[in-house]
Image (cartoon, rainbow, N blue to C red):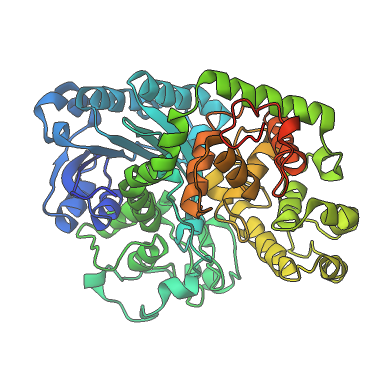
Length: 541
């Protein structure tokens, strides 16, 4: 973990909510710039220790070497999104689309440890591919390791559906360590939970809780709006997160039970913004600032992950990883690659699940195989897989049929695990199996082995799944005592990911598993049949 308060600077800061997330996570906020005067006033009021300037990014890019931004170890940026957002005009020639070039100039001049950029999902749309590539390539050409994620803000604790792209560039460690530290919320927060405690009919001006004055005609229209409704009069639903709040036409959504638009404080709650954060600007400016803000829970969780990333990297590249790396040269790596792939080609087991490509069925199969012998699962797999489906209404599991299968395997709790996993995949990932390790790890029943296995077997992404076979083989081959702890599993995964080939990763892993089953077995290993025995520290030959 980063122990000291690293200085953080906010470019295109808006109202300062992104900075607030980093401040709450323990960073020192130096200040920020924005081209909106009212936004700067809000940021200055709420984070007074920072220096906030009404200044265009172009000016900072031209004079950054003489500015406090040069002292930042973290630069965060919420570049203007109007040119990318579907709520805007999506003009490809909007000059604001190219302000990232000024950000790149600032980053090049200041060289912070991390750069974190947040924007709308439209940034990765095909029409904006040139701009998105320009950002990624520009950061990489400046010497940064870059990664990105598309997050649903509701998954991170925001009571609102709001998809955002987060780009992380890291100077000293792989950027993926930031994302591997992002923890999803246990469940989505609803509108009802978010608005709890706010008076429905009493205004509190000091809390930004004032109501729009509607004409009798508008009130009659609003009173007829049920759940959902047309865009101008969309009523919130108490039992789920809010839809995305936008500032167009100052049209905040309709309160779930009252015949009025929600107040700015209610909108702020739906953005996860703390009540202590005040908007001391005109009411219309408040609405725009709230609607354009980074959801606070997302900002805070990303900030925490940035703070912990260096420590996470040190843990997964710890003593065991270092020892294994020191004992392994390219000759040994090539021997592993060739021998395990060759073993699979000659002796590979013909399990039916090795022939499927459906990511969900592969994930479900790995749940069944967890701490269960493959031979046992093989006897019931076809029947089990017929009882397992993923459907948007959540009724994909034939629980009765599945319970019969689980009874034969003696793993009754897997039905409940699959049920919870189904629900989370539907709710959090829109019926899509994620391919990122960090997102898979946020699914019920998924640990280090299953997350890596799904990436390799379903998506052909080289990611070595560590199980008891890996502990046993590594311990024997290198002559190292291993306690089979989770921390050691992460280090072995990290090490083996320097070995697993980019081509044929599935064959490599299947070959390794079959080799450990038939040759480097738990009892009476067949060292005389091992092609690696001349290099193995535990060989009896």
